[in-house]
Image (cartoon, rainbow, N blue to C red; front, top):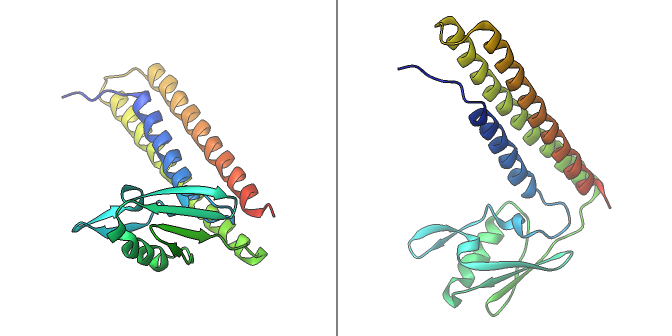
Length: 186
């Protein structure tokens, strides 16, 4: 069985890493309300663990307020408990089937901590992209060694892999810069 080199697969894996980073950064509380803030929360419902968005609708009526409309009246207390127990530090106010979550103002020290967390997520994403690059380069070297690819093709393909890596890293850095600006803006 001969393996073949697929640049589009490498690019897809790198873009997947960038997507994961965006999701992680979206979960960082910046002082502004965002529906994605509650994405990591799961609720014990109907005998299984379910994401919050499968038992309720999350909306952002104001810049510092989240509204969670629970569909099933019996699930309100479970949703409230899951939000309280999460590490987000939010305290829901319940009004019937609607939970209101005030997003507190962040102090400068907490903002700096969030920037450090964002940098940690970003570095993990850079490392993941470099791992994908290494996998691609290893495959190219193997194909050249086995005689399935000429050295000229290997050089050309390795430049393409490096170009894709540089683009993914630049996108990661741009995403970090946007999030850092969002966190530090008062």
